[in-house]
Length: 275
Image: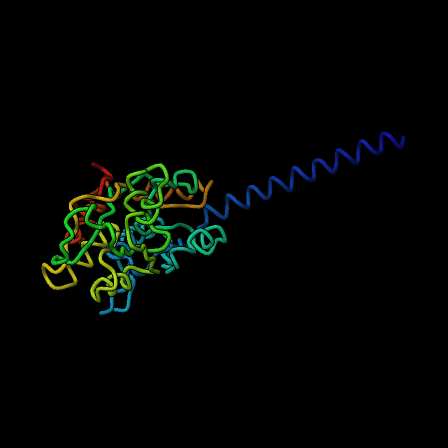
């Protein structure tokens, strides 16, 4: 009798566990299907992808415009969340943001995030003063070079699998890391550094904001890469929905129209989605 009672109780407990698990799974699914907002993490000083428009006081940019349209089509509120770029992983893992959407490089990070399809072909380049006498990467030997912390340019210069980049980095007098590229350009203007390594889109924007012909990009690139929207590893459901909407925007021409707003920064030539 005692053995029979124990079996009955064990069975009841197992059913309870299964029922609770089912409720948890259902709640999780409901939470996803009932999403009302999307919090996008971005570097607020990374034009043309995300930056502060001083005339309006609003955060704008190519990536934020794309995110705005994705949210509009899904009935979500877009929450723009400026972040410190070197704290992006903590922001994502803690749930403070839903994704990183801000000229975010896929290459070398393939296994760290769940990625959307790439939408921009990007290059890392070197910017110098036009009268600096620096014409090639070899001319950077003995020079002070600036880069943003935790950036793709820094990763390229520290890529142990690329001996040419390692040798280039080791030839510098100093490699100075900045929290943002605005500060880096201020030091370049002041002569505190001789060169800045950064994304080509950001370089084009920064050069366009200064005296015409004062700064140039070296013809030799540091590296080639692609941008995607990065989600917490395993968050396939949200990635799939955002990606599906992006592809719909490509099909109806909206993606191209948004890119054309930033044609002065070379985005119409750089976008790869739909090509």
